[in-house]
Amino acid sequence: MPTYDYVCETNGKVVEVRHRMSELLSTWGELCEQSGMQPGDTPADAPVHKLATGGQVVKSSSLGEGAPPCASGGCCGGGMCGID
Image (tube, rainbow, N blue to C red):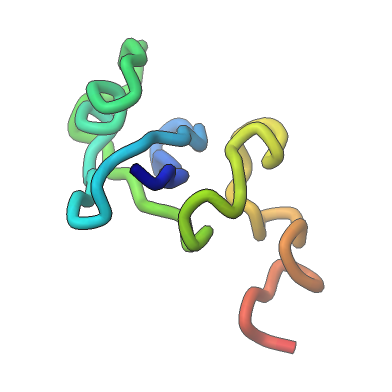
């Protein structure tokens, strides 16, 4: 099964999980359940978004303190993915 990185809008955490290509997680509660994490203080209904990593390309551990890959320009010049 491929791995995917999700970012939570509420707490800014990036979490890597494995699931089928046909699945899509949309809340922090779903993400925590899939990854085996405790939700902590973040509401279970907080929205999460899958990062466009292509699956198994970018690992959350390489992103530092949970920042999305382009927040600091890490994946492309000036953080403007797809725009030169």
